[in-house]
Every structure is written in structure tokens, then in C-alpha cells.
Image 1 (cartoon, rainbow, N blue to C red):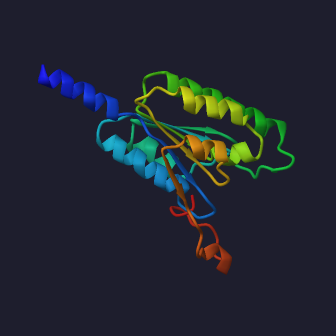
Image 2: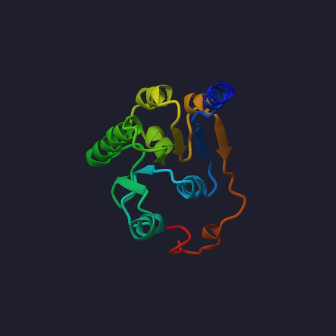
Image 3: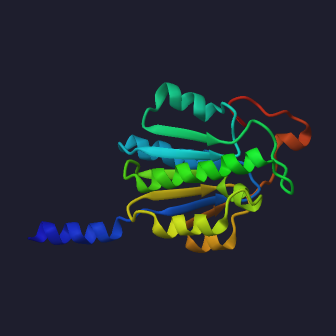
Length: 185
């Protein structure tokens, strides 16, 4: 009897977390993938939707080789998206990514879902804020849900359990250094 009561209490407090990594500093995707790696170490399955990304970043390459329980789905092109004039293909790919995310979140197959760069997709008006808010509000209680990217809207911050703002203090790019394989991508 005591074990059942203890289990009920633990279940009550063992709910999934909504976490947000935002700000102008480097490391938002990296931090989210760090949590994914931690979850994988405990036997969890993780699904990542990368909005506005279409390049074989290091994390994509390594998951294919070494991390079968981490699935990364890219919903973007390997090109710059114009904020005030996104192309129809950018909009369509972002909306497709949101639909894929909805299916992953409701599938029951994953312990953690990360919407990488969703905040930028929201700021660029590639996906509707109302749909992302609804997704957060209706996620399964046990699912951890991450949202990354600059410009996190106040509505997302309000719904989140954990919000971290990355602040850039110094970056080699501003001294003329090019993006490096294995560090920026």
C-alpha cells in the first residue's frame, strides 16, 4: 500500500518540463542537445525538429553515426531566410516542420522533443504563434519540450518552466574569424 501511495506522489511531481533557450548569445542549440544527450544516457528517445536549417551540421552527422535514439528532422534550406520577405518555400518547410513536431509530440514514442530555432521561425512569421502556444498547452504531461532560438515571444516565456537567456559577451566572428566546422556547424 505504501509503495502505491509513494508512486502516486512521485508521478504527480515527475512531469515534463518546457524549457526555452533564447538570447543573442551562442549555445542555444548546443545546450538543448546537451539535455538530449543526458536524456539519451538514461534510455530516453529524443526527437529534434530543426527549423530554418538544412545543412549537415555536426549534430546531424553524429546522430546518424552514433545516436540511434536521437532523431533530427530538418525543415529548412541551407540558405538565409529573409525576415521581412521569406520565400514561399521557407514558409512551407517551416509549417511542414511544425506538423512533424505535432506528430512527434503526440505519438507517445518520444520522451523529449526539441523545436530548434522555433523562436526565430515565430519571429519571422513562418509559423503561427497560436499553434505553438496550443502545442505547449496540450503536450503530454510527461514529455519534456524544448524551444530554442533568439526572440522567444513573451507568450512562450510565460508558459515555460525553465528559461535561459544566452547573452553574447564576445565572439570570434566579430574579430573576422570565419565559422568553424565542429564549433559553429
